Length: 83
Length: 436
Image (cartoon, rainbow over all chains, first blue to last red; front, side, top):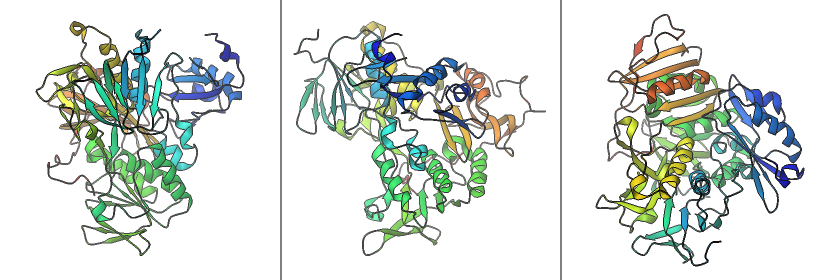
C-alpha cells in the first residue's frame, strides 16, 4: 500500500492483535521491542496506541508475524489508512 | 453518490461487532448510506485490555479505540441509545427523539454487566462493575486510592483477571464464588483447581462455595462490609460485581422479536426472528446479543460473548445482508476465547457445556502448563490451553471436524491418555440468582 499518509511521520497509530490467532512466536517483540513484549511464557502485551515514531518497526512486526495476527492503522486528521 | 433520501443500512451498536460488520459491508461492495449508532460517546473500542492493562494502569482507557478501515465512510450517531424499533415502518428510534429510517438493520448492541442488586447495597459508593471503558477508568481511579481490601464477587473471566490485576498492584483481595473453583462453568472444577492454586499463590483470599448476601455501608453511603451466606463477613471498601452480563435487548421490547435478557434469537443466517418464528429479512444481529443455532453443536441456540465471534459473526451477517434471499449462508463458528491472569496465558476453543470427560494431552496441571480436551459422548467438543497455545490450533481443527474423544492419540507427550471427570457444576435453576 502506498497512500499519502503512509509516509506521514506524524500520523497517529492504532494497533490491534487478534489474540485468538497469536501463538506467541514473539517475532513482533524482536521487530518492534518498543511496542510488543512477551510476559511469562506466552502472554503478549502490546501498545494499542503507539507513538508515531514507532511506525517503521511496527510495520516490520506486522510483516514478521507468522500467523498474521497484527493489524496497524495510521490516522491523520482527515483520513485513515490500514494495512 | 448516495442519494440524500436513501435510508441505507443502520448498525445499532458502535461496538467491535458493529464496526467489523460495517467494515464488511463496505468490503462486500456496499456503497450506500451507512449509519452507526452507539449509546456511549466513544468510537468503537477494544474490551479485552480493560480488565487487564487499563486496570493495571499500563494503558489509558482511550488507548483502546479500535482501528477502522479507511473505506468505512460511516455517519456516526454516538452518545444516543436506540430506544425502540418499529419494524413495520422500518424506523429506529433514538433516545434524543431522532427517528432513523433503515433499509437493512444490523443489531450489535452487545450486553451489559449484571449489576449488584440495588436492594442489597448496589447503590453504595465503591461498588463497581467492569464492562465498558468508563467502568475501567473509574475502577482504576479507585484502585489508585489504595483500597484496604477489594472484594470480587464472581470467579468468571472478569473476576479472575481483576483479582490478578489487584494482586499485581499489591492490593488485598477476597474472591467469592458459589462454585468450588473459579471458571467452573466454562472450564469445570478440575481445570478450575489450577486457578485456585494460582489465586492462593498470589495471596488472594478465595472463598469458594458461598455467596454474598448483601453489602453494607457507612453513614456516608460508602461500602464497608459484605455479609456471606456462611455467616461470615468481609471488610472491604471496594467491591467489584463480576456477575456476568445480560444481553442489551430491553430496547427491543415492543419490536415483536424473539428477544429477552439472554439474547435476540436469529436463524442460522443471522436474521432476527419475529415472535411468530419467521425471519425478518431486513433485521440481522451479530456479536454478544445474537442467539443462533450453532451447527457444530447440533443446532443448539447459543450466544457467544467473545471477541472472535463478534468479528466473524458481524462479517457473516454483513455478507448475508447484501446477498439475495436464496443466497443466505448459515453461520458456523468454533467459539474461542483467551485470558491472561496470574502470568498464565489461557486460551480455549469450543463449547465445553455438557462435557462428560476430560483428558490432559500435553503437559501437566501440576506445572500449570498443559493442554486439555473435553469430550462428550465420545466426541471432542472443546479444548483449553494454559501456556500451550501452539498446540491449540490442531485441536481446534479436530473439534471443528467432529473427531472422536480424545482426538489425537499419536502426537501427545503423555505416556497414556487418562480420562478424567471435568467437574462441571449442575446447571443453574431458572429461578436461581446469578450473583454471589
